[in-house]
Image (cartoon, rainbow, N blue to C red; front, top):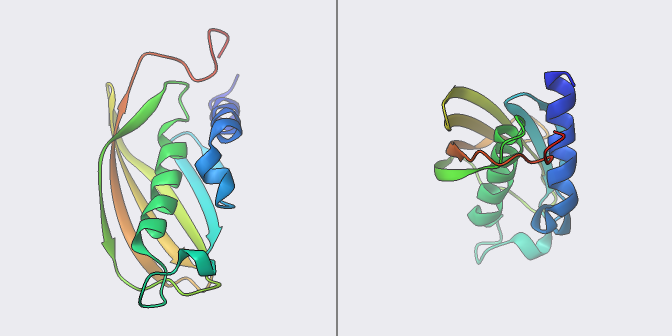
Length: 143
Protein backbone atom coordinates (compact mmCIF):
# COMPACT_ATOMS: atom_id res chain seq x y z
CA UNK A 1 0.00 0.00 0.00
CA UNK A 2 1.39 3.45 -0.89
CA UNK A 3 1.56 6.17 1.77
CA UNK A 4 -1.36 7.93 0.06
CA UNK A 5 -3.47 4.76 0.01
CA UNK A 6 -2.63 4.16 3.67
CA UNK A 7 -3.67 7.71 4.61
CA UNK A 8 -6.98 7.32 2.76
CA UNK A 9 -7.67 3.90 4.32
CA UNK A 10 -6.98 5.24 7.81
CA UNK A 11 -9.29 8.23 7.21
CA UNK A 12 -12.09 5.95 5.95
CA UNK A 13 -11.73 3.69 9.00
CA UNK A 14 -11.79 6.63 11.42
CA UNK A 15 -14.74 8.34 9.73
CA UNK A 16 -16.78 5.14 9.85
CA UNK A 17 -16.61 5.12 13.66
CA UNK A 18 -16.50 8.88 14.36
CA UNK A 19 -20.07 9.55 15.47
CA UNK A 20 -19.39 13.15 16.56
CA UNK A 21 -17.94 14.15 13.18
CA UNK A 22 -20.69 12.48 11.18
CA UNK A 23 -23.54 13.75 13.39
CA UNK A 24 -22.43 17.36 12.86
CA UNK A 25 -22.32 16.92 9.09
CA UNK A 26 -18.54 17.35 8.96
CA UNK A 27 -16.99 15.89 5.85
CA UNK A 28 -13.35 14.91 5.40
CA UNK A 29 -11.24 15.16 2.26
CA UNK A 30 -7.86 16.19 0.98
CA UNK A 31 -6.30 13.42 3.04
CA UNK A 32 -2.61 12.72 2.49
CA UNK A 33 0.18 11.68 4.85
CA UNK A 34 0.15 14.32 7.61
CA UNK A 35 -2.65 16.34 5.99
CA UNK A 36 -6.43 16.52 6.01
CA UNK A 37 -9.23 18.94 5.28
CA UNK A 38 -12.59 19.07 7.07
CA UNK A 39 -15.73 21.00 6.05
CA UNK A 40 -18.75 22.09 8.06
CA UNK A 41 -21.67 24.50 7.65
CA UNK A 42 -22.53 26.67 10.66
CA UNK A 43 -26.16 25.96 11.60
CA UNK A 44 -28.53 27.78 13.92
CA UNK A 45 -27.96 25.22 16.67
CA UNK A 46 -24.25 26.14 16.67
CA UNK A 47 -24.79 29.80 17.62
CA UNK A 48 -23.91 31.29 20.99
CA UNK A 49 -25.69 34.08 22.91
CA UNK A 50 -24.24 36.71 20.56
CA UNK A 51 -25.78 34.98 17.51
CA UNK A 52 -22.35 34.02 16.17
CA UNK A 53 -20.79 30.59 15.79
CA UNK A 54 -19.84 29.16 19.17
CA UNK A 55 -16.06 28.92 19.42
CA UNK A 56 -16.36 25.34 20.60
CA UNK A 57 -17.69 24.31 17.19
CA UNK A 58 -14.89 26.14 15.37
CA UNK A 59 -12.40 24.41 17.67
CA UNK A 60 -14.12 21.07 17.06
CA UNK A 61 -13.81 21.49 13.28
CA UNK A 62 -10.10 22.33 13.60
CA UNK A 63 -9.58 19.46 16.03
CA UNK A 64 -11.28 17.09 13.59
CA UNK A 65 -8.97 18.07 10.71
CA UNK A 66 -6.03 17.70 13.11
CA UNK A 67 -7.20 14.24 14.18
CA UNK A 68 -7.53 13.00 10.63
CA UNK A 69 -4.14 14.46 9.63
CA UNK A 70 -2.23 12.88 12.50
CA UNK A 71 -3.91 9.49 12.05
CA UNK A 72 -2.66 8.95 8.48
CA UNK A 73 0.22 6.65 9.43
CA UNK A 74 -1.76 3.66 10.75
CA UNK A 75 -0.98 4.38 14.38
CA UNK A 76 -3.71 5.31 16.83
CA UNK A 77 -2.90 8.95 17.59
CA UNK A 78 -4.60 11.31 20.03
CA UNK A 79 -4.26 14.95 21.01
CA UNK A 80 -1.71 15.74 23.69
CA UNK A 81 -2.79 19.38 23.67
CA UNK A 82 -4.02 22.17 21.44
CA UNK A 83 -4.34 25.93 21.31
CA UNK A 84 -6.58 28.10 19.17
CA UNK A 85 -6.65 31.78 18.30
CA UNK A 86 -10.04 33.09 17.15
CA UNK A 87 -9.59 35.87 14.60
CA UNK A 88 -13.07 36.42 13.15
CA UNK A 89 -16.54 35.19 14.14
CA UNK A 90 -18.35 32.44 12.28
CA UNK A 91 -21.82 33.40 11.06
CA UNK A 92 -24.95 31.33 10.46
CA UNK A 93 -24.70 29.61 7.09
CA UNK A 94 -20.91 29.99 6.81
CA UNK A 95 -19.27 27.09 5.06
CA UNK A 96 -16.07 26.52 7.01
CA UNK A 97 -12.95 24.70 5.90
CA UNK A 98 -10.26 23.48 8.29
CA UNK A 99 -6.97 22.57 6.66
CA UNK A 100 -4.48 20.63 8.78
CA UNK A 101 -0.79 20.38 7.94
CA UNK A 102 1.87 18.41 9.77
CA UNK A 103 4.77 20.61 10.85
CA UNK A 104 6.89 18.03 12.66
CA UNK A 105 6.71 14.38 13.61
CA UNK A 106 9.43 12.84 15.76
CA UNK A 107 9.04 9.43 17.36
CA UNK A 108 5.58 9.33 18.89
CA UNK A 109 5.07 13.13 19.01
CA UNK A 110 3.71 15.41 16.31
CA UNK A 111 2.95 19.08 15.75
CA UNK A 112 0.16 20.21 13.40
CA UNK A 113 -1.19 23.58 12.29
CA UNK A 114 -4.81 24.01 11.23
CA UNK A 115 -6.32 27.05 9.53
CA UNK A 116 -10.10 27.50 9.65
CA UNK A 117 -11.53 29.76 6.97
CA UNK A 118 -14.80 30.76 5.32
CA UNK A 119 -15.56 29.93 1.70
CA UNK A 120 -14.44 33.48 0.74
CA UNK A 121 -10.97 32.80 2.20
CA UNK A 122 -11.37 34.84 5.39
CA UNK A 123 -9.35 33.14 8.14
CA UNK A 124 -11.46 32.67 11.28
CA UNK A 125 -9.06 30.72 13.48
CA UNK A 126 -5.55 29.30 13.72
CA UNK A 127 -5.11 26.10 15.71
CA UNK A 128 -1.95 24.28 16.78
CA UNK A 129 -2.26 20.70 17.89
CA UNK A 130 0.24 18.41 19.58
CA UNK A 131 -0.22 14.69 19.06
CA UNK A 132 0.95 11.51 20.71
CA UNK A 133 0.92 8.17 18.88
CA UNK A 134 0.53 4.72 20.33
CA UNK A 135 1.95 1.53 18.87
CA UNK A 136 -1.56 0.23 18.05
CA UNK A 137 -2.51 0.16 14.37
CA UNK A 138 -5.71 1.78 13.12
CA UNK A 139 -6.28 -0.79 10.39
CA UNK A 140 -5.38 -3.86 12.42
CA UNK A 141 -2.56 -6.32 11.84
CA UNK A 142 -2.98 -6.19 8.05
CA UNK A 143 -2.74 -2.34 7.88
